Picture 1: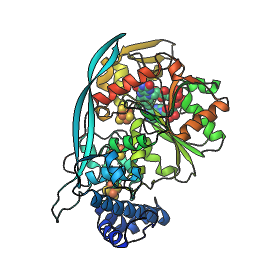
Picture 2: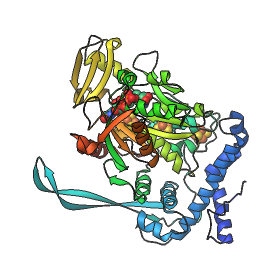
Picture 3: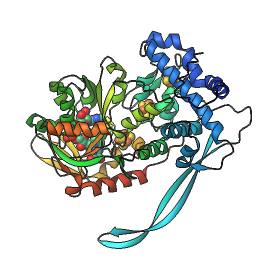
Picture 4: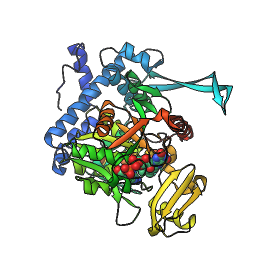
Length: 498
Ligand SMILES: Cc1cc2nc3c(=O)[nH]c(=O)nc-3n(C[C@H](O)[C@H](O)[C@H](O)COP(=O)(O)OP(=O)(O)OC[C@H]3O[C@@H](n4cnc5c(N)ncnc54)[C@H](O)[C@@H]3O)c2cc1C
Ligand code: SF4
Ligand code: SF4
Ligand code: SF4
């Protein structure tokens, strides 16, 4: 077993304690399964030997750290994460938050949720009214476990698919070290013959266990961010539109996504982009790797059928720097794997994450059925689809547009989107959507320094014109309102038999 311990990570821990924790970490099922499958993993070739040892060392370090965190919390009363980081000072606060959530999943820690109500004054239809709001307090306590306790083992993600909560983002298939998983927009298949039961797919899956508390509390540590419980942490919010005529011809709203991607390619900040274009079946999205502007323009516009974009991230490994466009569930998947199991990213070349707002998506068969049954149209005549002002809208090649109330087409949407609480791609570098801005403009939320610099760079290059989202109507108010509605309506996921 590899025993490389980064002494900087464990500064302040006695050699005896560190040795004991490392031995316990080496017993972890995930570490063992990954280590024991070394030859098969290297044969598949997704990860090089250097990648393999970096991932393995990262897993051992993180596991060792978790055992040390656990020791420091034994016998303590239930505490909120802010209190815990003050007690476990030997590790950085974001690491400790990450560790607590994983320890909960491993079966060592209980999460206790307390709900309190408080009265606040709110403006409702212009009138100030006193309303009750709920506040949630998440506390964590180490369980009193028997000596022979065996930490939880994570099943492969077939249990996520079978529970009908898989969003088909495709991340598990890119991550799987031995290529045992095949994901399409509506299927997921695991080759049981070759699966080595490492549980990595379960760890990184956005639908296996929630990391909302971890991510929210980590974001809150960054005091430079503004924070809203409806749209999460952000730097700035804008309304923006492209200045380029070529992009205006293919865009969905403000053409901001394509403009940002053009800026990245032109300035050599990335050498490829992972996005989606129309497949040979019209309106069926096809994940693609794009290297030039001509191909980039083919990705413009929204396809409302879901795409398994993350299935091709491993195919983009040969590129040094890539940008990814995707829905909030995909941003969540990437962020989860940047935290778990170890904080070592599986694909370090993902440099920019551009997230799309998303209320729901539709299965491809649902899009076709909706056009036929609700609009009584031939889908080959549809030139654009849009959701705006509570209506699903289709534009026809005759120049006509037809509208149906959103409520009447909701039944065509994917049921697994009901388990999604994120409207505004909380974990992207920059999020783009239509809600809040006028026709031909996009609402843009910058969330990381990198996202803000990208947006400012595209403005300086003359690709985008922009104003504050606060200066447009309905603006940020509507984004937050709908973001809050999506969070409140989200169904909880409860995977049994883990
Ligand atoms: C399924 C879905 C649902 C959405 N729902 C909402 C909503 O409820 N409210 C809202 O405000 N905005 C929603 N959006 C976002 C909105 O439709 C626009 O994509 C966004 O405003 C960006 O517009 P743009 O003109 O800047 O993008 P463009 O410059 O036209 O670029 C569009 C980008 O979207 C990508 N894309 C297109 N279809 C898909 C897909 N199926 N999966 C992944 N990526 C795709 C393309 O690769 C392209 O890079 C949704 C997007 C999708 C894909
Ligand atoms: S990672 Fe994505 S595709 Fe894989 S099981 Fe989870 S939700 Fe489904
Ligand atoms: S399917 Fe999941 S558990 Fe099996 S080898 Fe792949 S990542 Fe590991
Ligand atoms: S609603 Fe959520 S799960 Fe469904 S496509 Fe959008 S981001 Fe993904």
